Image 1 (cartoon, rainbow, N blue to C red):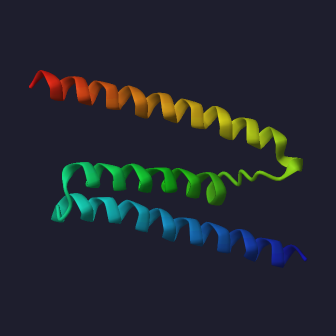
Image 2 (cartoon, helix red, strand yellow):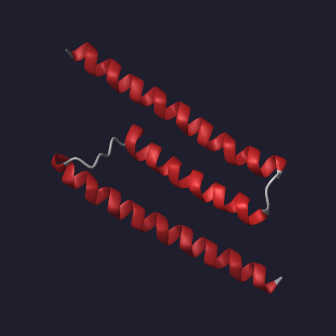
Length: 101
């Protein structure tokens, strides 16, 4: 029984690592080879960043949305609020700097 749980955890971590690496390399390739417009590249990068966050929460932090894991849900909502504030603030600074150039 304990071996099965260990292998399940190990499989989850391996899948998370693989997804994290892929979700890191794809935006790097999008920027490197610049086949899309700047706004499309930014949109894809933001979408892939959100996917990266979801992978980290699910695979590494093991945050689920089951009813028994209510405290984990509160941590998730708080973390999402902080991330949205950081991303929103960064975009505000970037667009302000772009307008000044």
